[in-house]
Image (cartoon, rainbow, N blue to C red; front, side, top):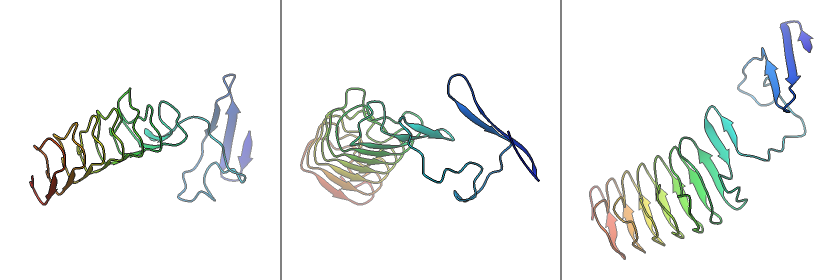
Length: 172
């Protein structure tokens, strides 16, 4: 137990190894927060902060980074970055160097490589490579195509195939 002039605070380690701290005061600074560790903290598993998942994903792949909530996961592949609520890679994912940023992006990607998807519900790729989709629902229908670029709200939303370029609102 720890006590100071403003009241009593307690710290407890239970039999399962979980540390709990009670009656702490929120802070906007890590230097004055309710719990500080001068030497830093090593965390071996994904962490959750207010349901926001931060870590390596289900496969624990040290080459990939995951920041998100909901259905977000990285299950395989190498050197991938996934940021966003419900953005994810399928359970059998084995792709390389994909960057997925935004809400519900690339939810079905399995083997795609070198794709960049930014925007809500964009780039619903399954096996496509070298695609760039930026904008709400950009590249929504391009599942298996390669070398596509869609920039703008709904760009390449209904297009399929490969080697397409669409710039602008509803382009392509």
